[in-house]
Amino acid sequence: MGHRTALPISPVPGRASRVPVRIDRADVDGDGYGACPGCDIANGCTFNGDDCDDFDGNINPGNDGTNDYCDCDDLDGFTQQASEISCLLTSPDEDCDGLEDCEEIADCENQDCFGGVNTCQGGACLAMPICTDNDGDGYGVCPNCDTTSGCVFNGDDCDDDIAQCGDACNPGASDYCDGWDNDCNAGTADGSGDPFPHFNSKQADICAGSTQSCVAGVWVDDYSGIANYEDPEANCIDAFDNDCDGGLNCGGLCASGTESDCGNGIDDDNDCLTDCADPECTGDPACPSGTSGAPGFDMTWLNILVVELLVVMLSAAVVFKGMKPAG
Image 1: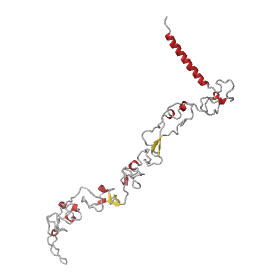
Image 2 (image 1 turned 180 degrees about the horizontal axis):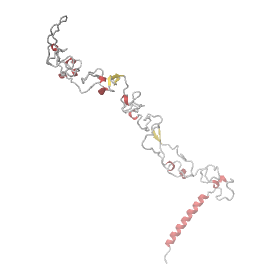
Image 3 (image 1 turned 60 degrees about the horizontal axis):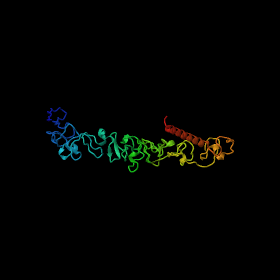
């Protein structure tokens, strides 16, 4: 802008006469630097120098050496940025908007502003928590473990050590049989989070569908909850394969012992002789004289022999009839 010189005014009696005043205006943004021509001290500017942006008081040649991003010199390798590129307290105002580090809330909120110790919070560099997540599973170690401090998830990571359980242990994990508290819940049984059951080695008879238990991080057979399970098998006359080996009761062998009750219909001593058929029951009130199945002889086996004999005789008769000549 050009300059105007005020016209002299006639003296007024008793007053000093006015001196012509220079009113040069070459510094639109008021930063002390003008836009040439008319940009030096002789024309009313505070400093000599051409202001490359006389509409932004944050950009002028006076920033040379203190903030090279805003010094009107693009040849020094630093130019004005579109946004703040560093939020550290020691960083300059890279986007030349007059705001530095944490004052740039849009660019720096929750970002490091002092060597990883402080973060930008609400426009100030404060000692706020930063998520400590050493194993990278998104869960941190409290008190710095929630999303407001930079973690992906809220929740306290019970094992943030990558050399230990690491990312396999956090509040969002399932509890596998590995000896670790994967879900960070001491009340959850080890192995309860496995997606499929682990069956016992023996699945015959009463053991069908039975499952293993997780012990010290390893799946092991567990038959403790199975009714009538015996190993070795002791009850040889019930209807169960008590040891679940898929074979005959007691291997098909009869045991020896004492018939404790001669009227309960059970071979108490597993000697293949039940109640009054067992010589041990001779004279017992439950076995009066003439009782079917005399002491020392089990009528069950006699009945079986009779049936088998009849089957053989009938088979022979059929064969004989087929061999008889016609006519």
